[in-house]
Length: 284
Image: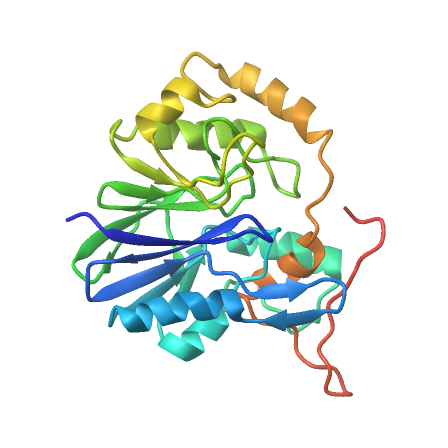
């Protein structure tokens, strides 16, 4: 059985949120909490659009899936869980990412490095269900140590491994990133059947086209500018290393990471009742 898929594109962060369902039960993948870095205010307009669709379709929310601890947007998973239910889940290697960033942000001693902030941690190859749909969690490290892809029927949600063919692949210069690992992870995905639909987490389109987020294994193997057939691992790593050296940090990386390693929850309030996000100086 193949899934029904509804996409919601957030132009501010270029993120695509997906509702994946069988007509009765659903998973929400990579939700977005609106955040204004100038004022420090959060809002829920993007998440509310997703919730409205789920309610209109009469879907029961089983899963709130994260492909990784995003650096470009804050997760709305806790808000959607309060609205719709469901289990917040990510790959079990999130514990590695938590360990790195607890030190960078000097988080409170009570912050646990065991992934317990999430409701479920997927192992590589673990199968699960979304109603009548069978799904598989695939560990695809490289962009970060904890990246996951989710294969549901004939559709794979690939997170920040690949982008559309004319954009290429994700960066590997965040803490714990590894271009060799990313190449091998992408090859796992590109060895799925050629007709497998691939759904991107982001699109950063060139000026000549509008945002798009669906492609296929065959299209990526033929035309991805970074990893089409014939590109060796060494060639990819050399390209990725040169390119990453030219990239600036994402606008929201500092607020986003410290929220997303908490499964989208904000830090605990301090003694004045206010919650604070930290900006470490000269750390990244």
